[in-house]
Structure formats: structure tokens, C-alpha cells
Amino acid sequence: MAVEQPQVQPTAHAGEQTRIHNIGYRNYDGPRLGRAYARRSLYSQSLRGSYGLGRSVKSKVLPMLLFVVICVPALIMVAVAVATKAKDLPVDYTRYAILMQAVIGLYVASQGPQSVSRDLRFKTVPLYFSRPIETADYVRAKYAALASALFALTAAPLIVLYVGALLAKLDFADQTKGFAQGLVSVALLSLLFAGIGLVISAITPRRGFGIAAVIAVLTISYGAVSTVQAIAFNQSSDLTAVSWLGLFSPITLIDGVQTAFLGATSAFPGGEGPSSAQGVVYLIVVLGLIAGCYGLLMRRYRKVGL
Image (cartoon, rainbow, N blue to C red):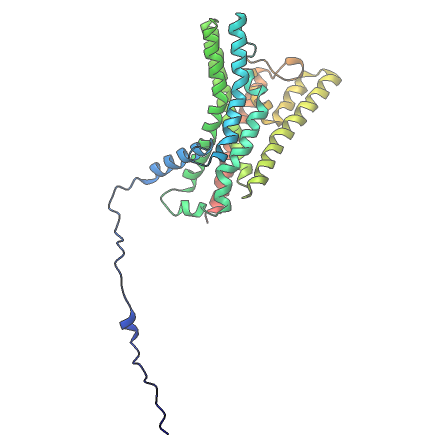
């Protein structure tokens, strides 16, 4: 009985199965905008992200809520001053940020990790550095963006107070001088708090840990320094010791600088802030912390970018 043999199909050579398809890739022949454009883009993107702009509605809730919360007391003060025809505002311009330091600290704690933690968590930082942008560009853009966002947050209520003071027909020269002093104070505060927030946030890629760490550093340091200052004042009424203790908390550092150089009323026990000579030390420490935060960020991202 004959068995039918299966027919063997001839195999095609590997070369005959290879196909090259033109999928339309073309070389980029447009303008090369370079590092400056990349740095500006990263700055604007980070600044918008600090208020949730360009992101989901959920991302806008907390920063916008904090913005409203910090401005509402200023609106109330203005309304009271206009209605009662007061001769001065209830709170000095330089004093407002000190009173609202809890809101400012919460904003830093929420937006500092948002600015840098996601890049660390998803390992996108080396992708930034694979382009013309360099470590210094990334750090400067992120630092400037958070400092600008903080300045907008802290300057907005001062603008409300200033406009309200003019509407209440208070003395123009005095209000303008106080407003300018307040802007200088919140500018220093914004640089200092932005640096501290970014340094702490850059340590861990986990946003929750970063938020908790920033809140702990800003809140615990202020609470501890205020408590020790009160004890020192009650035990010996030694204003010199009280003044030097203010060097150990970010918010008391700003309080000391504006008391020494901007004519502010100190929140220290006894109402006596540092003298002009002590104020120089305060200013040096503030500027040193700002420079130190920048240096730590540069060192951190040089390692990350390797």
C-alpha cells in the first residue's frame, strides 16, 4: 500500500523575509532654543504646578484653598478699617506673615514635595540632564519657581491691606513705606522657606514622607524656640538670651531680621527683638541658609543625574 509523502514547502531565506518600512521619521531642522529656553520652560511649568494650573482639579484644591485662607483675614481687616474709619491698620505689613506662618508652612509642605519628589520617584531627572539642561539649570528653575509661588502667596494679602489702607484714606507715605518693608520681609521668607522645603523634599522620592518632614522641621523648630524663649524671659527677663535663641528657627530668623532692619514689632517675649548688631548676625544666617540650601540641592542632583 503506497503511503503519500507530505510535500515539503521550500523555506524562504532570511533576506527574503526582511522588510524595511518608511514610517515617516524626519530630521528636525527647526531652531535650537538651547538651555535658556529649557530653563524658562521648566520654571514656568513648576510655577504653574505650584498652584495646580494645567493639572487635575484635585491638584488645585489645596493651594487655592490656602491662598484664600491667607487672604481672607486681610480682607476682614480692610473692611473693619474702612467701616470704622480707623487711623491705622490692625496689623503691620511686616507682622502679617508671622501671624500666618502656619498657613505658609503648610503650603511649603504640600508644594515642595510636589515640585521635586515625582521627578525622583519616577526617575525622570536623568532624562532632563540628557538634554542641554544641566544640574544648575534644574535646581535654579525649581528653586525660583517655588520661591515665586511663595512670594505670590505672601504678597497677595499685603496688596489687599495696602489697597484697603488707601481706600480708607490712611496716610499714603506711611502705608507705602510699610508696604515696601513688608514686601522685603516676605521676599526673604520666600527664599528661605523655599530652600528648606526643597532640600527636605529632595531627600526622599516619597511625597508623604516629604510633607511630614517639612511640617515637622518648620513647626517643631518654631514651637521649641518659642517655648525656650518664653522660659528664658520668665526666669530671668534676659532679652539678650531671648534674641540669640531666635537664630534656631526659620520664622524667628525672619522676625529678627525685620525687627532689626525693617522697623517691625517683634513677636519675641517682651516685644524686644534683636539689636542692630544682632540683626547683622540674623541676616548673615538667613543668607547663609539660602546659599546652603542651594548648594545642598546642587550636590543632591549631581548624584541623582549620574
